Image 1 (cartoon, rainbow, N blue to C red):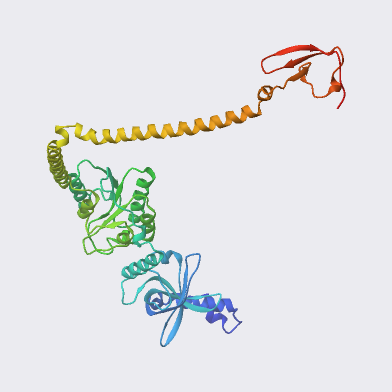
Image 2: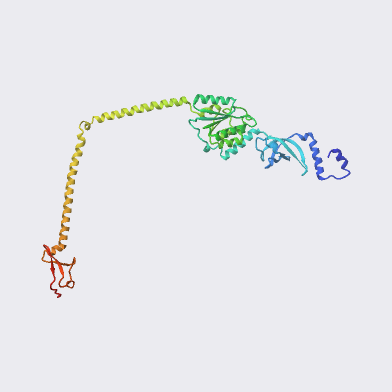
Length: 410
């Protein structure tokens, strides 16, 4: 409803509440002073909605105003607002018709007194550090002799030329694999992430170098992103971060397995110097040769000393003591065997005498005889009948007798 319509109706009929709110909203929206206004204050009652909208109030010692920053504008923030933060917010003032309250619709906002990028950097750094992403415990060792080196950087910058020159000079046998990436501006963080994921998915490198040359904090901002930090932390391939100059530090530097002050330094850290290796090999070969000569000379002196010993002039000197000992042991063995055989012979004679005493033949030698019938010894007279033929065994032989009489008397 415009002002003229309002004037015509205000005396003729009553307004609805929503019409009144719409009228007031129109007055706010038509005021050029309120369409693009900058307000300084402290954030309170802050709430980040799941939709991405930010709801909060701005206050100072004398007052308070409600504010909202929709997702489309909040997405451009490079820092994280929170309660207590002093900010400078720019936007327009309007009325929310449903509640009849006015609020500041914020289109942009920055910290008051601290650069937004620097604040965002410090906030993310503190949060990732608290999560342990910077801990030395998770740092992977850089391989000593990498065969393939992946490089994620701009294909046209000075950084890639420095890296290639240093690696080619220091360790020419290494293969350099370049993933061309954006390192500045919109899409740079995602581009570097894709490079890291490419090398991890293809397992085509032993170590990665990511980075670029120096620049302002805005130029290096792609390497301060949270998604890139988590990608570096999750990489199975060790990563050397080389972003900016020696005094520049980015979030990527803290998360990486090794930080290099410059791209050239990253190349030096990634590979050994072949000239130093050759000098080390030559030194080791010289030490081995000298050690071998010392060992041979020592063994030769030992052999010379042994050859002068009397044992080599008369080898029997070595045998003689053992020969005498062998003779003594032989004699002792014979004596022990004789004593053993004598004991066994006496025991055998004793057992023979005992057996002879128990033998039936010994009884027969004293005038007795043994009668048998059908192969069985006769012990009872009742087992014999007149006419039976019985065998009789004497000391010197045996004969057969026929029974003609049986005496059953006791």
